[in-house]
Image (cartoon, rainbow, N blue to C red):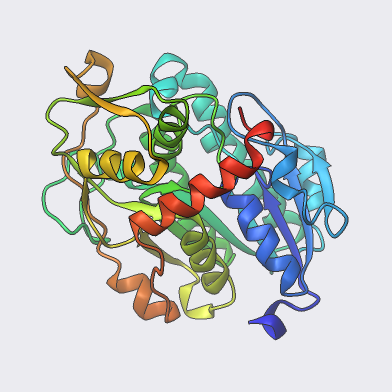
Length: 328
């Protein structure tokens, strides 16, 4: 792995967020020349402290992916582009669908067009979402499951996915598409519950607050530790067999919501559970139980998740216990 990335020119958009900064840290250790681009739009999670350990080893550009002039300059010499910038809240997309479309579709179109015009050899990776599937028909969910988005966020992620596949087929740009389960871990934002519910609940527990569970808490989700996700992105980026392919990416393990919360309370040693009815703006977009079928991605890159939910929660808690000042 070290030799595969040594000297590679890599661009990570949204690179000050949880996923982007985790990838950046790994690639710096592998000898890549990393450029991190981020617009720092609140409240999406960009945090300067996320790259504190590597800040002297990367190039930084405060840039919005919608900025045509900046992006055409940034993509020119890159071997690999992790295009992770995005609007991250599916509920916010309902309130402001225009902003979601502008960032999650038009912004990504801008990056792809810049790549087509100025650097067609660059490998570009897209971070989609398990929410693209809408109401789940069967578990575990493989890549053939119908896409029936229930929010503008999921709709624009799906439109962007199709756009990436179009650019791959028509313009031969090497693209890799991920549909990601619920990610969590160190370096996620902790100020609100709009992104990474596991992280938000860890904060609530650390503050000794009640953690609210909608309904009976039996809903099943697939929670993926960020380091496992970062490894999947990195391995796929250098595997030519992945180019033009779409992958469902998760832990492959289903966990009931209430069990996830109990794990957090046990690990942190404080907090309590409070059951409440489903809010209307949540029940309308509830997808049902979700577990990722990860056979395709595991086979493609000889990868499998290493961190179970209890270990991941513990690692996350230890990180924020040490660095709380920078995230609260």
